[in-house]
Length: 166
Image (cartoon, rainbow, N blue to C red; front, side, top):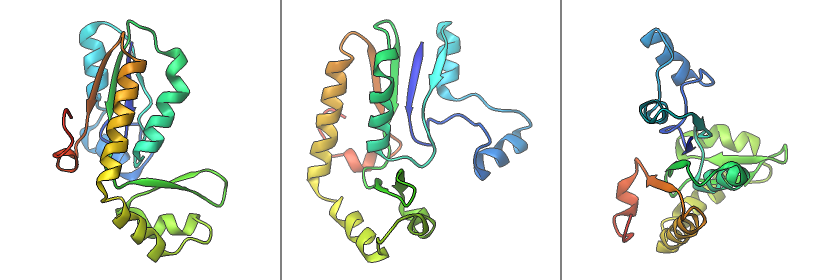
């Protein structure tokens, strides 16, 4: 089995949002993701847990929620998101992923959080401490899945240029 965790760069084309739906219509079929293609080439199944617009905390949580299902022969692919993305508790008592591009929509779902506060959090997340935290998370997952093939990647390489080994 190939397990895929990540954000929209790893998520399946399921028509659950406008861009995915538009792309399926434009193509005339539901395209395969890289995870589908890899699993197909290896002759195994794919379990794609990736979700659009998610932050690294949510990606890590999805791995933790599925860790007991992953077998030693499975391959794990983690597509890490932008390190500045984060999540806050929303009015419904669930996590709300905060992305700069969707900030105004996000603020509608948050309780007692100002735009200024969110902007300050975005600025705070430029600290190198977040890179260190990220690498500790990767080291832990590499240890937890030490008997598996595990691949880490990101479409945001500029944020990890100073992170050794990524």
